[in-house]
Length: 214
Image (cartoon, rainbow, N blue to C red; front, side, top):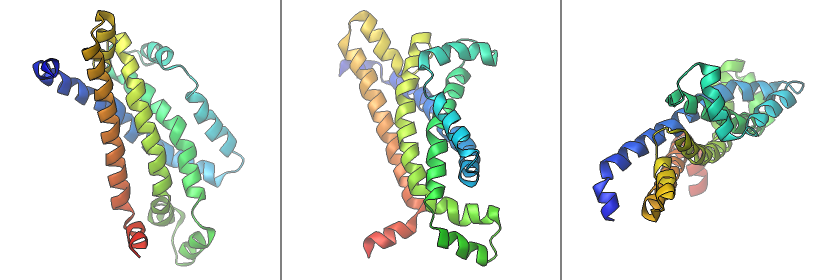
């Protein structure tokens, strides 16, 4: 415990850096995955290409992608944008299919009723389809959040500051306490992300609470 108390400010600082590197790509990836998933849902011809192409992104080894990013983006090796862009790609790989599946799960009679009431495609998407797909999308976000927290720690091998530093530095020094600080810090951060996503999803779907109560 003395190590934690002696280095508390540094741990909090690195935890915040880790949260930004893992969390910001979730928001960016979701914003991009929504139209792509909607497109995949609408076009049976493009669906295999959109979902398959997004899925291929996840097959790229994380360390290799992080090393290549500075060459592609023209940034420095320690730039946080290398990690943010890489994590956004991994988030897309998970969320495009999730969004498409969530939208596909919306009952057809509900869509027809909304159209009959005068909903335009855009208004129906934001007012009917997307709200009903939130539970499925939230499930994909929870997986992506845990994945991002885990993969971001790999960036410590390149010198990017975050919680993974304690794992690599502790391992190099054979200092198990430091390694456990990094592991537990990543675990706590992943649990916080998961809790936040569940709370937001619950707040955006009040009808599910009413159904559960009845």
